[in-house]
Figure 1 (spheres, rainbow, N blue to C red):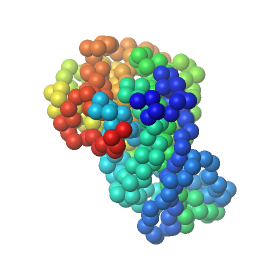
Figure 2 (figure 1 turned 90 degrees about the vertical axis):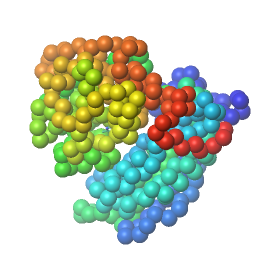
Figure 3 (figure 1 turned 180 degrees about the vertical axis):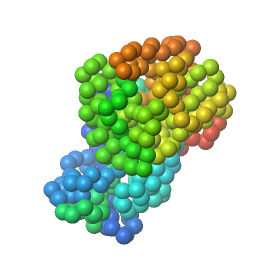
Figure 4 (figure 1 turned 135 degrees about the horizontal axis):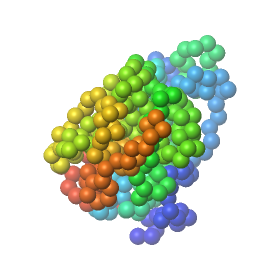
Length: 345
Ligand SMILES: *Cc1c(COP(=O)(O)O)cnc(C)c1O
């Protein structure tokens, strides 16, 4: 068993930081051409023109998914075809040659297989997979550039927030928007994250874990936090903001909706969610590949704290998380067909 794992990693203390691995996938493509199979090359730095489109005008989009070592002593991917579809629409939105499904899935599988021994032992974390594509050709005037680079790198990760057990302390910002409904908020575009850095930094300086952004066209509605979707529970009704253009269509969001509806018999509504409903909720939680399902314990709005509902094992958030992780680690049967086995090791 030991020989299957890299021995210089402290598997019991993984956080969410970059751990360099053996290799990465690398491919390039010219404007108006199609992506052709790339190569697995040693993990390392890359060279770029200072005039690269991505460096000057932010032409870049990324993805994030995880590989898990499971009960069945194999490594699996969780719904990678949804990431494939999403990077297809993200690339279209940013005028990057469209990344196709088969090209994408083949690239992440090759990268995973070459780095499979960096996948943490079951229960200690997962191998985070980061596909990313940029305009790397030069541009001085604003335009889609002529050359593009696609890379997939991986990193073993544990939990995203430092104290795994803690419930989150969030603040609603009325000073900043993350994305606008007809902008690029529904693409996993790198620029969205630079917009969230200042509000996120300010929130952390004030002791909060993250920021709740309001909808840019109706500030009575909530959107999401900087890198995860939001859910609000009242009674047996579970609401999450509908995909109105400024929200990222999360794979975890979709999975939690299906688990809540089909397994937990909750009434799920993708709809407008008001600040009032947020502050009056029995439970609030956020979802994402990195954060999984994380409960919110407090929401600060206009300087006032609003402590939220039940904690612990009995919470709906905790039950949803247990089922989701159970499926991902093949501890409970996958009724949805979400698991893609990659290797027998
Ligand atoms: C990636 C991301 C999410 C979560 O999406 P998943 O597919 O569940 O990982 C939610 N919101 C934002 C802004 C994101 O970037």
